[in-house]
Image (cartoon, rainbow, N blue to C red; front, side, top):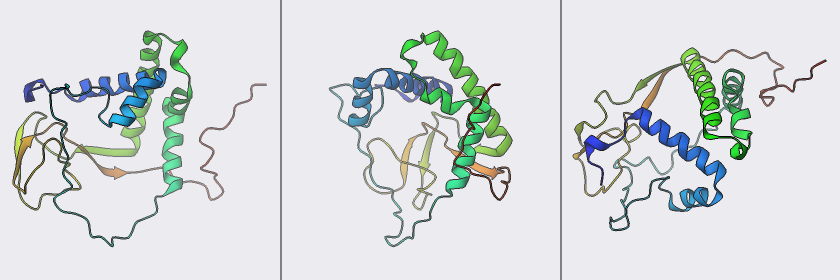
Amino acid sequence: MNTPSQLPGFFSRLSIAFGAFFKSLGDAEFAARVRDDGIGPVAAPASAPAPTVAPAPTPAPAAAPLRAPSTESALQLLSLFQREARLIDFTQENLGAYSDADIGAAARVVHEGCARVLREHFSIEPVRSEAEGARLTLEEGFDAASVRLTGNVVGQAPFKGTLSHRGWRATRVQLPQLAEQHDARVLAPAEVEL
């Protein structure tokens, strides 16, 4: 079992996530295991009991109204990721015919383009200031929307645990304004070379 000092850092998790993403694309059985197990690409040892996740300590009101998402803004962001990083092209491509080196080179281009979009249109900061792997205590009344408890969660706050991910919070969002007649559903226009 991993100890806190052996927990992967952000870039290691990013590498693991990309590997699981590509393996899921190329291996239907692996993708089915990830979907059915709900635990991702690394299964817990057979002898270890499955971790349980308790509901958030401060539940949302039962009658809280739901907000409709802004479809146009989501489409605009997807369009920016396509324009700068060719993200849609990358995810729609059948990668089975490519070598891992080719996929890695393409992932670098996608990564750089996505990072450019995020830097240009968002300011993002960690939710928690502590270093990953740090021990911390969550007192009663902690913000359950900003901190998700995982592992063997029992009882009530205060909770003592190890920070496995600092989380992310957007502090600025600045998407370009759209012309009145702009069709946001066109994520990337077709190209015809003459």
